[in-house]
Amino acid sequence: MTDKAKEVLQTELGTLYHGDCVSWMKTLEPETVDLIFADPPFNLNKDYGKGVKDNLKNSEYLAWTYEWIDAAVPLLSPGGAIWIYNIPRWNIMIGAHLMQKPELMFRHQVAVSMKMGLPIPGKLSPAHYSLLYFTKGKPRTFTRPRTPIELCRHCGGEIHDYGGHRNKMNPLGVNLTDVWTDLSPVRHRKDKRRAANALPEKMLERVLTISSEPGDVVLDPFGGSGTTYAVAERMHRHWLGIELGDTDPIERRLTGREAVFEMPQKGDAGKSKPKLIQPVAEQWPLIA
Image (cartoon, rainbow, N blue to C red; front, side, top):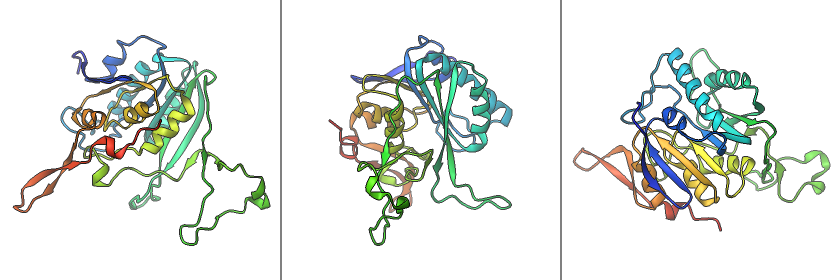
């Protein structure tokens, strides 16, 4: 798609476009974005709606991936961060591509635990996604979140004794590691905005906390269900976004209108009909 991206929504903090992310990013001013978060299609032949192909040849998928990355990286301001979420198969190649860029500094590869992974014959059962984290030189900002002391879900007691030094632990919790076991894809019907899985807001809250500050500019070139933009809004970050497929779910989410869940349900007469989801204002209360 080479047509000029079309602006479809503007809020006090951000602007959403409809169109192709590669050509759109090439029109933006270099070094004007503080954080890029990207959750591209994984090329697993999923249905993301009209206009989005998710069944490319491996070579085509990687060529396209490198193209959008090469359009995105120049947008980073000095010390800015880029996070890329994908399956390990592709992030191995993406990480190697990013390593070749002298302006970028490798920070972490986060393993994000994947709940309910199905066994694959002849292979180990997949149990995590990959989340790459690079910065343009030394990070301008880095805030390490803490996670609560882990408790047993049965008895409520603490699982670890921390080597007998529990009394010296920070009351805010333990330092976040590069293995995140407390996240899972949004699969419940009432929380989804489209047929494909949506990312949990908790993940984006964590990424924005680590690599940005209020007033910074966040860019997500794959709008999806709009999670990045919704979190940026309530965390007081400016944002830019674009989606090649249907932008209506994002627009509804950000304006507090009822969202239409795209995966059909059968009605009493056996006909498929959409299900309405609660407005965003009821599901994502703003943080003061």
